[in-house]
Length: 301
Image (cartoon, rainbow, N blue to C red):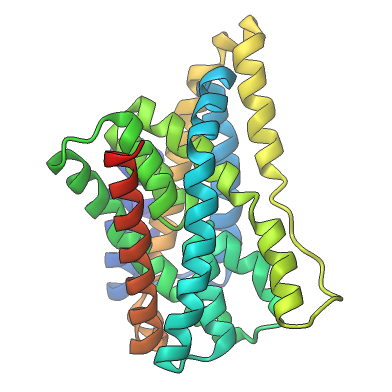
């Protein structure tokens, strides 16, 4: 009953995504998630639908401008993070597959990257779960920490949108943090993050070479194509303006529920199973990418 009531509260649109995540964490560790076995699938579908809906509030020309601006940062940050992750993993003597999954999740797009890379890597359930646990824990922290740092440093919406797209792992937390910061930040962050997600394909191919696995197929994030179609309709089809605001509002509610479900899946057992070393690797990589991206945006952009 508690879970259902809180889900309905998220549906009402009365609470923000960070608060929804916090409520999810509370319910996970007090009353428990009654539908935990369905959680991963539900959050994945909801996130994809929400991202497509947000496309109806964006302009193609602005998105292209943001994408070009974030391209150099994206390429540099992805490969630096993967190399550093490999070195830290060896230093901490972490299982090679777990270390690589954490590095890919940090470098590209969190849980989506791990879900795509895991079959290529042929990782077992434990290795995948540990990597996902590390990423989800840090995502939860980022949703509260990044907007606070952005305001403290007086970042513009453009700077913050670019920064959180590069430095926050999961698309859900990127959109949640950027939405809290402002509409321009949301547009830039969503566009740059989804462009970044396409790097799953070359990184998965690189992984298959590194781990000598040529048989596995790469999962392509098809919802990005639907997001682009939504932007095109919003930009070039005037009639879309009638329904676009409602679709964007529904998408934001969907994002709120997604973050509530993510929080509800992070119970104490998940936190305990992660282990100190993988979490330490994730934190070190996160500090590196967040600091390097922030300094580059503030002083070289």
